[in-house]
Every structure is written in C-alpha cells, then in structure tokens.
Image 1 (tube, one colour):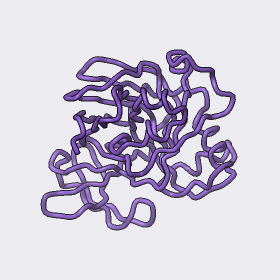
Image 2 (cartoon, helix red, strand yellow):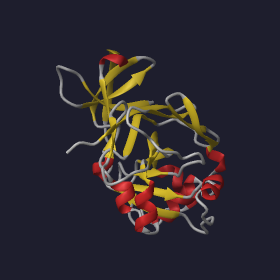
Image 3 (spheres, one colour):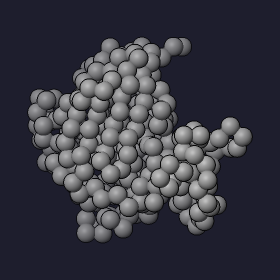
Length: 255
C-alpha cells in the first residue's frame, strides 16, 4: 500500500492512499487505526506533502564503497551515523533552496526507511518488524561546509535539505532495488541497494543500540557514488525502482 500526506484547494492536510493514478482518503492515521475510503481523486489534482513528519532523521554516511572512494575516505567499520533536523524536510515537487553560506550544494540519492514500531536494542533478525515502509530521499549536502566544519550538522541541516516522498510504500522489497539520480535528465548516480556496506537490518540494530527508535522516525541509508553540485534552475530526480520518483526543483535562497 502506498500512503501519502496531501492537500487539496478546498480541504486541509490529510492522509491518503494511492491506487494507480487515484487517491483515496484515510479515516484515521496510517501509524494507528485507519480505514481506507474509495480512491476517487486524480493523483495529479492533489498537492503531495512529505509523507511523514519524522521526529528524528537518522542518516548513514559512506555506506556505498564507490561513494567512499570518490570522497577519498576510508570504509567505516561500523555504521557512520549523523542526524538531520526535521525542519529540513520538504516533499515531492517542492523547492530545494541553495543557501548563501555555501558555494557547493550536492545531491545524494537515498533509500529511506520509515519506522513503524518503537524499539531499543533491536536485533538484526527482528529489524523487519520495526519497519513501517519505505520512501525516497535526497540527503542534500553543502559539500564545502562539510569539508570545512569537520562535523556535518551545518552542511546537512539547512531548511529544504531533506526531500522525502512521494509516498510511503509498505510492501516495497529493498533487497536489490536500483537507486538513480538524474539532474536535468542526465544520469548522475546509479547503484543497487545490494551494494550497501551495512544493510538495513544492521543499521536498525546499530542505531537502536544508541537511541530509541520512535514511530515515524526515518533512516536514510546512504548514497551511491556520483554526487555532484546542484545549480539554480536544476530539476533533480531520485528514482528507486519499484518504489517511486522524487522530483524537486532548485533555486537560490533569498532573505
């Protein structure tokens, strides 16, 4: 099932589900009890919002070997975790803003796990029971600030630096899915999820040994090689086969 948050011109923000190119409303919350109503709204008639508003955004750095090589780094011996603030989240078709503090902002295409069950000290063999579903993400990064600061909070934390969407898929199989990123139609990144250094069950177990995972938290599982700068006017598309396509435009932030 594909679940969304959406808004229409006449109604407030609400949850829904997608059936082909139609949207049905949900009575209740997807993270609790709900009932699916008939899918009658055309998908292109609604404004898609981030499908989840996470309390925590847990990210895995350097989780694809070829990406480690392109950054002249060493392969981690344990998952390299960092956090992005919830204020960085935007949705499908919303705008990524390039901040004036940075001269190089890169895209990072990623598979994103949505947590559906609260847990601590989760065992790898039990990790699947804590997953609600999956969505598509882009860990937008101010690369020059990342190099300059040494730690990553500023470079990863700007508003609009965490596009998520277009929906949560509760039935997606992440075992061997192709992750790609196109900018203005040109292929920049491509790899399979099977190429991850630390797989999803390992990441969930490791993260939950540090902090409690709460319902609605998301885990960004790392990016393949091919990161490159974004420029004003670009259209960046992150696609995960069998899951969906996340499209965002790029503009300069004005203040």
